[in-house]
Image (tube, rainbow, N blue to C red; front, side, top):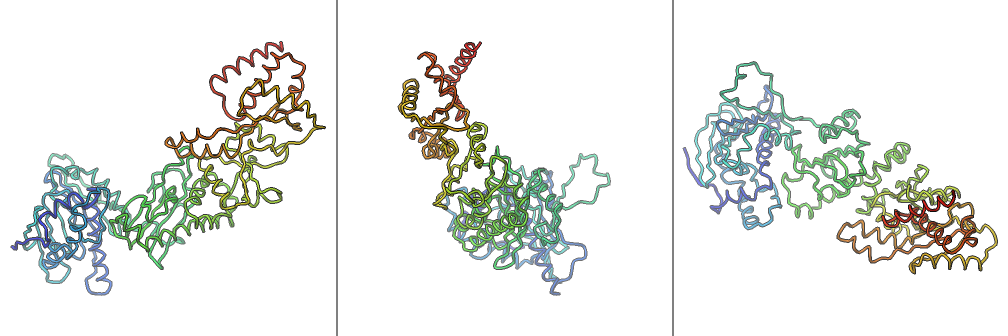
Length: 611
């Protein structure tokens, strides 16, 4: 037996490891299982070039749980280690890696930061949950002797000849009192499912039966691996069927709504990148929720939604991205400043844009069917990434109130003015929609909160184009006859005196084929500014009150009811004016409770006068 001290210039290594090595304790199992897979991969490579015998029994990593003994064991039949290799790779902790680690994280305050995986400390994550760790390993080299290493979490270790008689490594963790959760089968299955579902080597879970288990003598089924060693993203796109893509989506994301379409990424140069991105069917009620993009490293799960690798606007999607050249554990600052990562992000953006353009060009009908589900994603992408906008600007669609889909160029084609008329509440603005349709005009639907920002963005990108909500303009007005300025002036004064609102502008116009006695117009500029502030949430909503609504009441001098006002006494004329004004307001926005009460009482009174 040999004794020694772990080669690190500090007596405080293990407390620091327990506190700072990883943000989540459960990652220890990912590290140990993926190390076992690495050992198998190394042996396969050696066997492939004839430097090691091929394995006829099959390669595997086994996780064994023994609750009674309080142990969790991870074993593999990979390359194994000699005593000298254990001394080199375990005792010296990847040479200077631990010293670098201590220098960087000894006084670390940010518990949210994660340590870059290339410090070589993956094995030592075991001490986050274990009081004692034992390694028993036998090298693949012919004639090698088994080696045993044992450490109780202090800086001292014991080394002796091991008992293992088969090639590979077995690591046994004696679980600490504060980590007993890792002796529960369901907890271990949860961790394996999270991190190891797609590892390239078969992973098995064995649970030691308790002595009181009455079923221990029954014949058991052959164990099945807990992982899929050949996930769909590792295959060539030409080898995958639509049903396989859909099944993979359902299994990974537990979403039983079929995805709209997907993009299979398969890049070998200038970097290694594989993955599948799915466009889910978005429930607009929860459109602001993130999707889920899982980041893998050589089929080992790293994290969900790593914004430094995946462009932020793609977070509305669901998918898997496998980047073998990224470290397993990555610090945010490392990723933000890494040129390789930026290239990956740019490539993913390009592939998504290419897919959208291809669908528009080759499958326009399907693209239009998808639009209501993907418009939020595309608009958000344009707002967040100018390069993405440049690629997809010609395939942005606008849905008209008739249900037709048009690009901006298609909508503006043949029009004298570069104006896009839109509605954001088709039911509330139905009167204006009808007036537009009666004149053969088109209005598009822009219904989401994001559209408030998007139309301003589009005006910035297309300086000659203006977006106007249909209740801010009256382009369909026409003189129905000779204008009577004296009559119009008296009519305007009568309404002004009754309504008594200095902020309200009044206009009298002869509106042809418009049954309404009056319509209310709202300045596009003031309305848009208020909507913009409201969209930022509660903190900015108060700012909206700084901008006064600029309403204009347009009185239709050709309406029969308006014409009869001169024949009524002042009291009845006032009641009719109130009713006309409230009707105009209702077609624009809901009345306040007090206003609605008065409107209903007045309506009942007017009906009683008729009969």
